[in-house]
Image 1: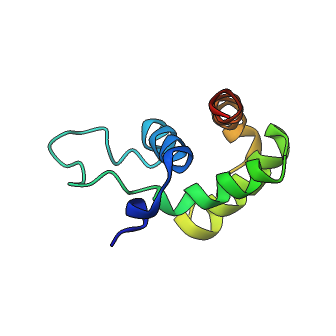
Image 2 (image 1 turned 60 degrees about the vertical axis):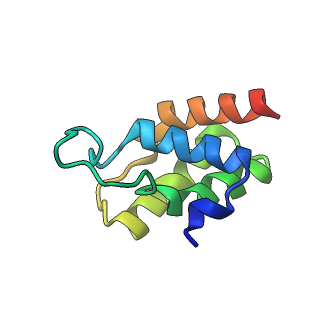
Length: 97
């Protein structure tokens, strides 16, 4: 059973937003894209936990950038660069509530 198999609709929303954002570019080329859509599923809990405790977009972008550095090896991940994406995530999360 994959992590995605345990996702509820709100977690799937976050997973879909992450896949659409595709910060590593793994879904850009259809000839070499992964067979599954779960490349970023390990980041869903980071977003969901932050949203669940009411972090602001700025606070959540700090947490997200930290997760990118630790989980994805992106040494240059900077919260300010992720803020537009996180603002979109924040808005969609609250629309779906």
